[in-house]
Length: 124
Image 1 (cartoon, helix red, strand yellow):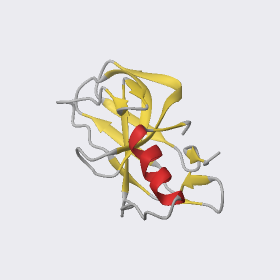
Image 2: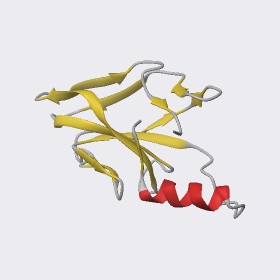
Image 3: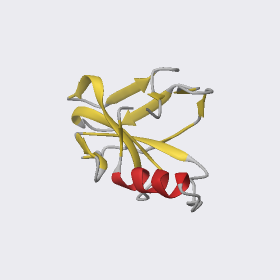
């Protein structure tokens, strides 16, 4: 993941000055058609059977996803270009976002898989 959202930047800022922000107890991956520091991922598919996926990260510095993520679609979502991490399965606060290495186009129902260890996060 390449970019912290504005929300995550503010949370990090409060943390480094000892203000102890509320940290997420779980995080969820979203997929969509765009992204920005303000919104995280945008353009999440609607009416396609789509749902954000819970994710667990592991690592000492570099964090990586420990299981495959599977997004299933009951109807065509079109072209998906970005991925993001939120602190809730629906709604919630955006934390991270990045463009997909390769956009995915589904013009029919189908599945998008994100392999183990392919989502990485590093605070730099």
